Length: 487
Image (cartoon, rainbow, N blue to C red; front, side, top):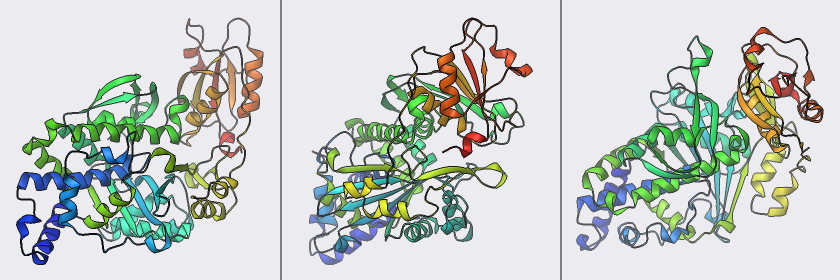
């Protein structure tokens, strides 16, 4: 792991050797040097958590305006005669990795994987999100989020480099840099800041958020909690902010990868605002604690001058110059879902090989080429009778109920609950009509068409919990393994 404090000390020594008047180059105050150190770390964390790479909702030049930090750093670390790897080909690639960290089940599994590409000539930036459930030959046809973990097991500290090389081989593109962040450390940083204020754009309801430490609880339903966050300005500690950023199975549109990336962007912006507030910058005790957290939570092969080179080249990028793509099994995506060993949920290329994915990566800065590999989005069937549906996963394949909820909500269904069925042996997606009066026939037909549901009149005993109440939904939909095979 790269220690940012050590990097700064090395750069200072180098500067002293090159200069006859070190006081003109070295920042004379220990507290100020610590500020510079963690500001560099903020940029690197920004690469991981921002849905817009280096930029959130503001122009990059406003991030550190008035502080003078970067002017001082440019004197400390000369960069004018150096170029980044890949600049000669007009493309610099950085693999961004996020993992749970020590103390978590699967501590080194990379929950977040993104390929960030920078084009110096046009000042464009692209960000391609890679799902953790993707399987590929470079991971021996296991999920690619395990590459970092296996590398760390064999040789501690090698995970970032090994993972970058593996993705370079898979995508057939050079990846010279990587940045890896420990999510738990990021949570600690927010706590050290005294919490953050986040403007939550949509209500978030996730009935399947995993409870840390309860992964193997014999009571299956005790493994998960209901994560509910209201719309509007919310104060979050590190734990809640991390949950908000990582939630994968929220109801409706918040269950998509695009929404998750946007939430991460909001968290980053809130952290940035708190970090750069006068209350933080003028608190040397807090700064010292923050620097310690950063040094423990980030590993990268980027040198300080390379971070500054990125900043110099791309600090004026606006939203129109940033391209975001997500590899997924959506109707217009390049992947399809399937079941691996033991029924595990996996993703594979829809074409049978990685040619389409490689074409997207190669031509990401050419809009027409990047879009040409995408198929048209399927037409959404709309209902008019506002039917309420409870969706339960009747399989052991994670994510099926949440994915179905997104489809049904787009069609106008009201999703009143999502969760797991008491029985997990469903092979056929089944719909039970719970309406005590007139059955909403059009909505029933739409359910059968959209998700291939078959209506059943043989009600299991456990369904009585949903019947004959004033709040009973119109339909109860139990997802079967057939949904995992559907196009």
